Image (cartoon, rainbow, N blue to C red; front, side, top):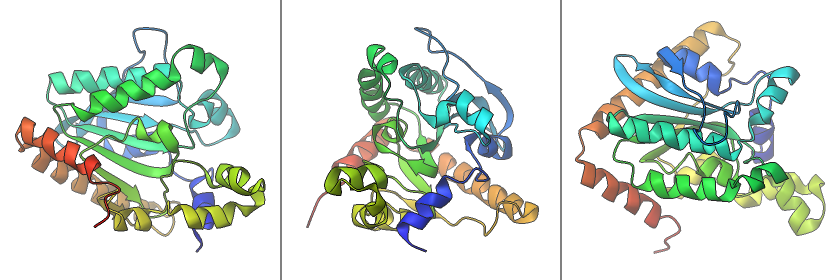
Length: 264
């Protein structure tokens, strides 16, 4: 399977979204709304619940499945109020020393004029700055698309895990092909050159883990085993991170990002 074929898989309407992961991983989930400045963004789901017996804060970018859901969720393109809501919930998690799980699946932040007027760039930048100094464990799980600053705004984490068919890139292959060759039909070539796959990024040490996906999410038993395994792995990793001293946690997070791009 080519890199571009994997990317097309992440866009299939039958693929599980953030809400599906929350329903399968988190019990007693209570969704919280609003950024306390402008409004609520349905493209971003956030709230508190339990990961097995562990209280956690969960924040996920939701695309929706069918056309109606996609329109109501703005196709997973988050507005500034969505990022501000996420930061509000992360600060709340820090106050109660709850670990934070972010679930990323977006082609990019919303780039409309309204979002720009309400401070889209500032909202993303504030998340990057604040997450770097958040004194509670943060784990980011990429389940599909991971586009540019829209994904990075929820991925300044202690660890990033990616599903085997997910991608993480500064630009979509179609946009890259259009910029470089003025030909979006060369998206496959761009996808290969961008090195945006989970396996490539693991090799570059941009991410910590690649999670192998089940052969088919429609197979109920296979999907159940997949979620059960993932739940236990995330829970165990959070337990280990919660045991780390706060100063050490921040030091490791800082160094994690400082080393990206180093060439020896």
